[in-house]
Amino acid sequence: MKNFVELDPLLHSQLRLAIISLLISVKEADFAYIQEATQSTNGNLSVQITKLKDAEYIEVSKTFEKNYPKTTCKITKKGTKAFEKYVSDIKNYLSPKK
Amino acid sequence: MEEKNITEQESLAIIQEMIGKSRQQLVDRSKYFFMWGFAVLGCAILQYVLLKINPERHDTDKVWVLMPVLAVIHFVMAFKDRKQEKVITHTTNATGALWLALGIGFFILAFLATRLSFEILPLLILFYGIGTFVTGKIIQFTPLVFGGISCFILSVAVTYVHGPEQLLILALSVTTSYIIPGILLKKEFRNEQTSAA
Image 1 (cartoon, each protein chain N blue to C red):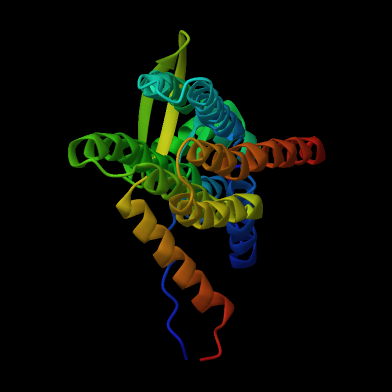
Image 2 (cartoon, rainbow over the protein chains, first blue to last red):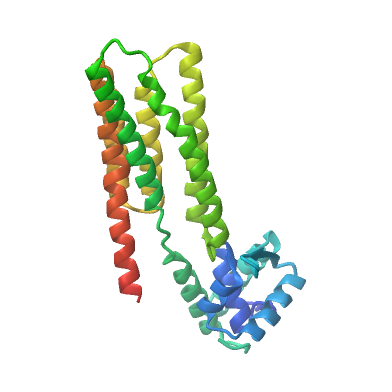
């Protein structure tokens, strides 16, 4: 019988997983792009980005472009490792026969 | 998308969907190919015409003074593009780094050619070829790969040609590696935009 490890609760949530999955495949992305890709609301996305940032899974930088604030997100090494572990754990859940 | 717990199957579906979205991100960089392609083509033809009118003229190299000016314009345009981009993919980053290295390489090559007195054209065309071939492979765009291959051939061919006619080979190389792939890239980008809309 295989031992199931607990899935990372920070990643095992719809929106946070979507953010990390998006950021794993790009160098960096801005808030508007993530919002468009994840079809999320402004407030909810801000909350989830803050949670990921506090866990040091992503880096967030704020700049100004044409007098408008621009928030850019980038996955960290810790975030990449957490994502890789999450994917590996998910695989264990989905192929439990071994 | 909401904040809620999910099943393992849903997790995989989300990961797949998001990675797919970022892959669809095609960035139109054809303007840089046009800018350099037409500038080099224009300079090469102008120098060729000047040499044909007066073969004794020794100041025709001055037409290339446009290149450093263009490099500055390119740098400013690229900087603005970067600031406006909503997302920077690994592909954009890799091709950007490649062309930055080649851009620096072009100027070092020009400097070395002056210092060591060697023929710059074959190496210049070879550099064009490396840039377009690798970019074509990275962004999976075959016309750029063929453009690169044409430059590899032309970089050798130019050594068999002498005098002002070498400039025509240079003009041909930028046409096959920058201008034609640039036109096709623009077309591809427009098609992608239309189908995405």
